[in-house]
Length: 362
Image 1 (cartoon, rainbow, N blue to C red):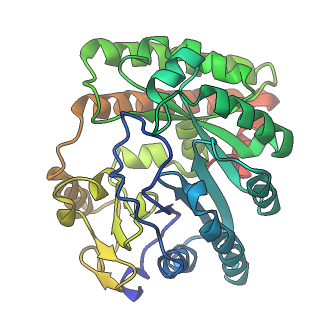
Image 2 (tube, one colour):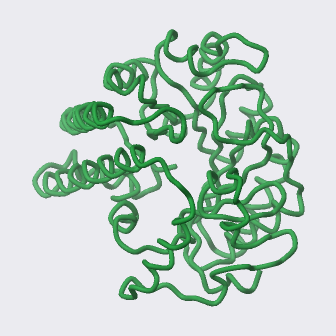
């Protein structure tokens, strides 16, 4: 798509299918059982790799992406070969509920050095309450069996957890975080659930307290040479992403989503709302660009910031979840500042930073 050739695209998220074998009550994806074609996947990969910038992240999502393992088997070798030809550094990640995991999946993950992110809520009672099969029944037991397979076959540094946090679980998030550490997870992405149940003031205060304690725990453990990683902290250290998001930033850098029908937007939520047409910026299958085709980003241009505000303005976002994200960003920036300061006099913090910059982020 030549119209986007002037953009720096560091990450693209591909929704390989909207089908899932789970029926989590908070999931925002419309289960239309649409599958991405090889044509759409191939064009999206080309858009990512051929865009400006050296480091690229290809994220595979769903629904449940392992339902389209046939497509994943085509995506990985093609994307890596194209990246090599264009002299780009490519990381491929996949986010899965893990219940369908088989040996053939593990073999492919190892072959292409993929990052594997597991959706998890914590202890059995909590997990089974919000993550259950389409036909009924919690997934905790099945996920636990598959986790053993995963950690036995994949390098720990290539495994992460998408830690689901809801208003009813936020008060115990520190406890569940420690529980997930006990399961051997070392890399954490905080999946703050939106548009499900209201985030009240008490929930926001609970998040501030819980996340603050988690950050303190991680800083304390860096000093013990026990490295644990938080997604927003990692991205800030590697690419100043959090700081940029709190200012004017180009959404093409990290927010581009491609759906099975080829439609593109800057959020998966916007591809599942009733008025989604307002948010679709193009269709990669049809080689059509509807918005942002000719512009070039400048952080000195107020027009860029106001343009993005207008783009998101018709989406009635979850204000409480927005507040949670703001708290997360501010505390993450504070943590990064602390890490940077300590790295000047403590080699353990310097080693921590170097590990992140070498690619320990998903």
